[in-house]
Length: 110
Image 1: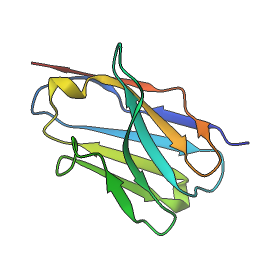
Image 2 (image 1 turned 120 degrees about the horizontal axis):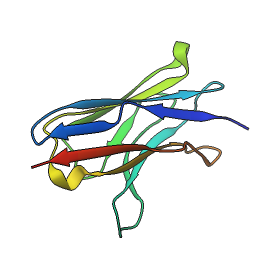
Image 3 (image 1 turned 135 degrees about the horizontal axis):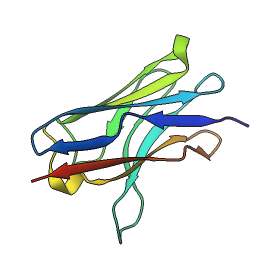
């Protein structure tokens, strides 16, 4: 089993930036960030493989960057040019074994 702890969420104005972090209790494999807005289904934002290949949802391409630091068992999500529609709870997921973090709230004001 693995424990995932997210941090870095908060309130930011539109156009601003945030960096989310997800620290794992063991080595990482394929990791992903998901988000869930009120009344909507949880959706994939981005993922990164153990070889650092990445993929992004169309809605965040060019604005968000996923990265990893294997020495720190940490995956990051750098979010730039934030929009009000990015408001959601963001979850880190071990995409190989299916473990989820507790989530961190991101709120973007207009």
